[in-house]
Length: 285
Image (tube, rainbow, N blue to C red; front, side, top):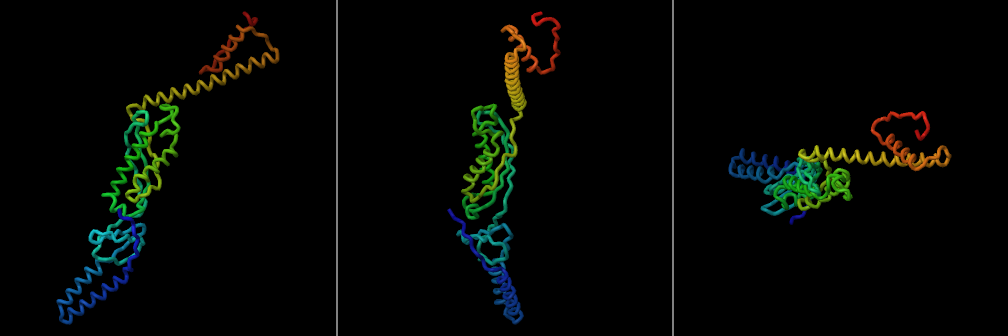
């Protein structure tokens, strides 16, 4: 496999000056009555000198190939003259932004989800980008899609699906992005491409199960809230009974304690405000 070789090309201004000198000489020969040498010199001027002039813009490069052999890459920006018989492949060194399409895949527990990623990448090794793969732009698109699919298959969407999962697609965004970036760099290294950043841009359940999963999440949230309310209510009841016993406010038997606990739990755990009934008689009537 070819490795990148950076070369320094001669200034194009010298080549341009040589072009005008030879063009002038060709014109003088024609005027002097030497048409054949004038034509030959003019053809050589255009073929050898003018054809070798190239302009390399900032953050661009030219890969030079002579008769099937890789000569090197011009990465410096400016005006240059190179061998006119070389094939000059332009390769951009700018950062590209790939906004991946939404993919429908299954997570690690089999739930269908929709996922997409935004990937920022650039060419690091021009020789690999040109010679190691057929089309490096297409290679990036296909490998990026494969990496996102593999990532989605490796983790559950949320802890609701797998309570023992240490990383989820929804909850571990930073970790998932780091793993996606590493996998992409491993996949694209063959093409001389470096991934600068990779982020999940879209993540959702597939439409056919989205409503059911929403209801499941709501139910889980309600259960968690109820559990917290009950734990708090039990603590408050326990504290009330303990304080009453410490201060000898009233002496209750076990049956009345049970009734009091029941009433307090109803008041503290109820969804609506209760309407108390005031007992104007004794405690036992």
